[in-house]
Length: 293
Image (cartoon, rainbow, N blue to C red):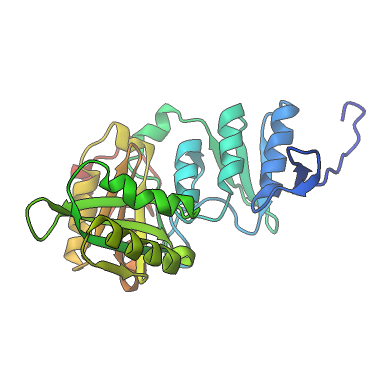
């Protein structure tokens, strides 16, 4: 590089703990690029892909989706984990760890892309950056679980031992005092195994029935502005209620609110939320719930 030569490095491969050459798995090429940029202390790592950047939502679902000029590492991580396929999670984690800005651009056009970088003041002014969705989950509910210490651990330990990832967990009142209903989501590919484990656990701990529903989707509203703005959940829930979309589960983090709904309402939910948060418009100063409603 110092001699002005162009260096071509193979991505997607590396060494395992025993020194064997192996692949890095899905997203390995992106991760390789960011790792090289970090090692070389590059100003930016440019990732060329089949899209022009990161959008406020899936353009295939809503034509009003807007390309973002800039997005924080945290927001990109949430989007990637919730279904956005522009960048793999590991490459974003690497960029955040070593503070490597990542510029996502198209391989087919010269259009400016999206810069994934550390959070700044302008980003916090934006209430919501994007709406994501995932149809890769299934919901399982174990009813009338004894409400005593150790029961939740007894339920989820066998699932973890089977290498099944559990995402959202909601606990509610059972049919009788002293009992609770526990609902959780798992990847749809692990759905049948998780149901079988749940039925076995229910018998062992003296719980009730096991109900399941693979026809769900998870819709998420994401934005670092949630840290300093209020009312996001209110607007989200009211918007979905107006469309008679029932919320089956809810989870929140500092910069994300996710809901589980019937799969058939996914595209509708994405569109109405995109409109409610005015994501088709370029941000201009601080955005408040009052201005949007």
